[in-house]
Image (cartoon, rainbow, N blue to C red):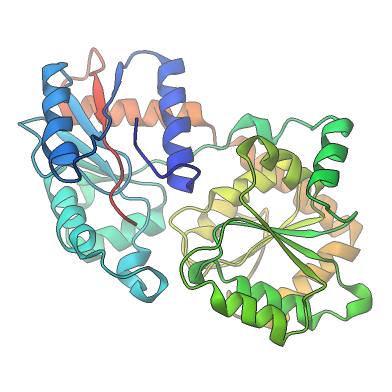
Length: 357
């Protein structure tokens, strides 16, 4: 299924949901792929194929639905609304998605799903949809993050990525909303003798240039490494090798990397923005997203205070254990049944690719 950009956060989450639905049983998932035709494929051929295969519910898992659904009831998942609230964080020329596809999808779906209460509140406020049509279904965390990597695997990854013995990790596309500049400022505020290098796992995205300028201007060239794209199978080990995970995003619809770090047993410093407090609970050290002093203090403390680290590691493991893909799949099955108006048996579903985000 061409349901998301390869390697994207949304794409990975959709793949995990599909796998959990298939393992759960009770619902038959029909994966609808796009064709090479940018309009006819997703907006006519996909729903036509779904109808011909007798799907009972059409699910758009990433922000949008086809413009025509041939009478199929629909569920759409809205992962976040950052592009509406902060368009400056995103590339231009997304008017078709933001002005047409997403609004039509939200208003045309029988049920709209959000991964967090924060996103649900924003959605209801922006699109004025009835609250009873909007449900919250949190994401799950893959159990592989909690499985201890063999020492040989850790040593191999450390060698291949040239990782130092201690390092702070940030995961995500290098783009404005991920607030990597905030991380750099906090790192620079820590005395060099007490500083730990920063490893950034993620590709360069929209407006990454200020990050490179900050590395130079803050004299951090020897303290920051950009690892680029890291293979999904290496991510659990990378988290486990890290001394600390930072997540200073200015806004998030959910914040799955926080749970991944929790599961891996890595303490977390995160910004108290968007849905992050909702996901992190009391298991992360939360700071104001743009408070350099508080961010630097939290990083320094967790690198030096063993008792505080151990407490957050234990809290994080417990927190992550409460977010499973099985529970996510079960919640979606209930939503599919409700949307189809048929509580039993569970309906077939057809899934669409995401619109631009």
